[in-house]
Image (cartoon, rainbow, N blue to C red; front, top):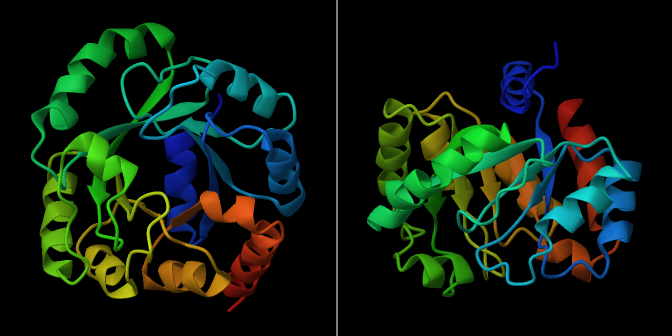
Length: 248
């Protein structure tokens, strides 16, 4: 029997194995094949696909192109209920618990539920927490929500606790695409101390030092996106740093 994506994440977390995910935006797939090749060569753990604003309708095409080249699990990171495709391995069912927009807490999920059920795709209930990264991001603008202030780890801590108590299976702390700075180690550490579920951290991570700081603070999965387009060696550097970290 094939193990689920979520069970695999939990197994690696329980074994103390940190993971690297690469986020690919279907609206920017000019270098898709090269990105997938580098993910394969370096042994990246997960590929996230999606974004806050996907306008080109290339979700399905992107999944097919990725899966033709790799066995790395493809997990949808949807911006709305239209970004559902059964060809993916799983979908992060995001509940924006850092905001107070009811549509993104439950409204969109009600609309998406019949399509998810029919598709057979594995949904992973995810507490999505936008964290201030020093600029207004697409996620914050589209969601009409205010991110958690970067200097208020206690808010993130209580938000994550509530999410876990509600049964959410992952906490995703995101500074947003193009953030000026990533989620702080202090905030990740505060959340790690109060929840047992896997923690995913992304947004604003542009260097191995920033990724290692997130892993050491308690992130189980670090996500990089835009930065790999600007630095062709970043994936290799990150995986090397992760291997070094695992050996400590």
